Amino acid sequence: MNYRMAAFVLCMVVRFTMAYLVYNARVPHWVVAIFAACVAVGFASIYIFNLRETAFEAGGEVWWGGLRPVHSAMYLLVALLATKGNYKAASCALAVDTAIGGIAYIAHSTSH
Image 1 (cartoon, helix red, strand yellow):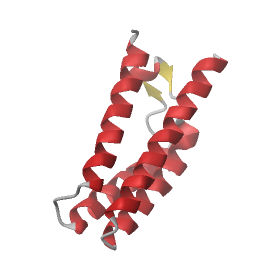
Image 2 (tube, helix red, strand yellow):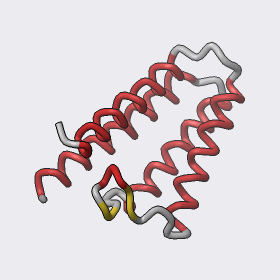
Image 3 (cartoon, rainbow, N blue to C red):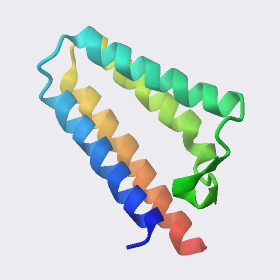
Image 4 (cartoon, helix red, strand yellow):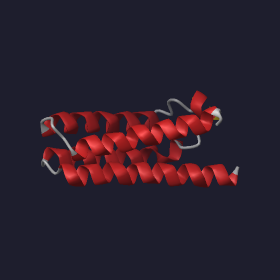
């Protein structure tokens, strides 16, 4: 397994684990909401200010840069859902976001 594939597998495991942990939340809803809001702001900032255009795990240029607004919006949705205490919907949003990333990786990998 090359390092790009290993990074992808690790990314998917971490993100699905986050979805699982949110689904089984044992922490106050505001903790999940603040975490997700910070991630959303991070993705938006990286996109808006063209930060991190290269990455070791990408082997150079970041191919997923165009997906950052989608990830930002999904994490903002997670934050809003967590604020309402709707952990199940928040975890579904995280799972959908992870699936989007997985599908994008497969599409990118098969086209290059």
